[in-house]
Image (tube, rainbow over all chains, first blue to last red; front, side, top):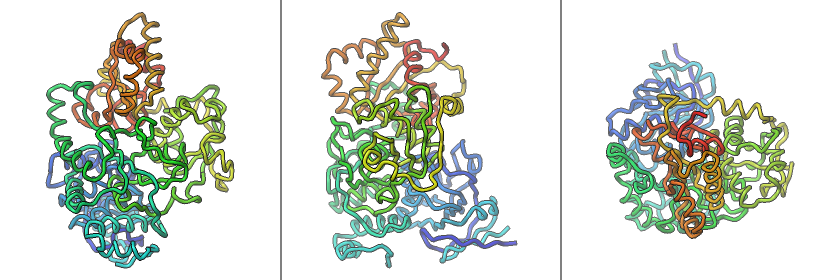
Length: 148
Length: 430
C-alpha cells in the first residue's frame, strides 16, 4: 500500500530511503551533537527529550518532522553533518520549513558535495501516515511517495 | 540557475562570479534562503552585524572549512562585527581536570576560530558578548536599520526595543549577510511581518518576573508577534536603563522558550508608541496572563537534576549578559541578603556574566566592585550555556535566574529574589 503527498521543494532532488519520524520538532543540535563530537560514521539521535529519534539511526534516512527547534547553531550542525557524510538523505517537513533548518539544508547544498533533499508543506496527513521503517521516495517535483 | 527573486545587474554578476567563486556562493546561499521565505529582493544591511558563532566547537568542522574558504579568498564583512561570548574562562569559572579535558576536546579549535573571525572582520578582542547593544560594547543599531544578526536574544532586543529590522537567522547565514552587505527581505523586515497576531493582556497584581513572563509569552505565541498590553502599568512608559534591562531579560525568555523575534509593548516600545493598535492584525488571538498563569508556567518547569534535592554547586546570573546597572543592582541585592542572613560571603559559587567592556566599566566603580568582590561573588564574560554544554558540567547541580539557560541546559530556574537567597545560603531549601 502506498500514498502520495505533494510538497514544496526547498532543495530539489530524487532519493529513495527509509523513514525516521519525529512527531514533534527536532532539536538539531541536541540530536546530532553526540555523534558529531565523537566523529561517528553514523549519527544516532542523542536528544533525550525526543523519544521518537533518541538512539535511532539518522544517517542516510529520510527524517519526517513538523519543523526543527532549538539553537540557531542548528543550521551549521546540518551543514557539518552533510560535509562529514553523515547527514540524512532527505528532510521532509509537514509544516513550512523554519529559518534555521532552511539555512542548514541550503548551506549543505551550496557548500558541500552532499545535498540533503528537502521538501516542506507536506501536511499533517503526511506526518500522521508515515511511520519508522516505511520506504520513502522523493521525486524531483517535490512529490513524496510513502510505502509500507 | 533561475531565481524567482528580483536581482539587480550587480547582484546577478556576483552570482555569476564577478567577485570570485566564494562571493558567488555567499550570494547564492542568501538568495536561496530568501526564496524559501518568499523574499522578492535583497535589501542593504545598514548597521554592523552580530554573529552567534563565537565558539570553536569541534563538531562544526565544516564551518571552519567555510571560514578558510572565505579567508583564503580575502573576503571580509563590510563592517566590523561583534560575536557571542567565549565559552571558557578558567580563571573565574573553575573547572576540575575532567571538565577541562572535555572542554579541550569540545573547544579545541577556539584559538584558530578566533583567528578566522579576526580575518573576516571581528571588531576587537573584547567584542564577545550576546549583549552587543550595550553602550560599552557599542554595536547599537538605530530604529529602522536593516540587520544581519543571529543570537536569538539580541535579535529580539534589536527588533523590539530598538525598532531595527532583523530576521531570526541561523549562524553563518548572518555572516554571509555581513559579507554581501545585503539580506533577503521577508518576514520581520517588512511592515506586514511586524504586525502582531497575538494580544497579551497582563492582569497580574504585581510586576511580573521578567524571565517568567517572557517564558509564558514564548511558549504561547511561539514564533508569532505579540502585542503586550498592561505591562507599562508596572514598568512605566519610558525606555530607560531599568525598562531596557527588563525587556532584555523578558525578550530572551520569549525567544528561547518560544521562537519570538519581535514583540511590542503598549506605550513603551518604539513601534507600539508610534503606531499603537494599528500594529495589531485583525482577528488577533488573545492570551491573558494573571498571577495564577505565571505560577502555572513556573511550576511546570521540569527539574532534570539527577537528585532534585541536591545541594547546588554553582549559580549563573547573566544569560543574556548583564548590564552595568544590573551589576550594581545585584551587588546591592546580594549585600542586603547577606545582611539578612547574617553572613559576609555567599556560600554558593556565584558567577555573574557581562560583556568584557561592561565588566571593565563596572571595575572602574571601585566602591561597588570592592563590595562585589568582598561578597565572594565572581564576574566573567563567558557564555554560561556553552559552559553547561560540557556533559560533565551539565551533571552539576546549577541554579540560575535565566530562563534561556534553563531551557537549553540542566540548570534549574529561580526568581531573582529566590536566587539571591540560595546564593547566600548555599542551599535550595528554605
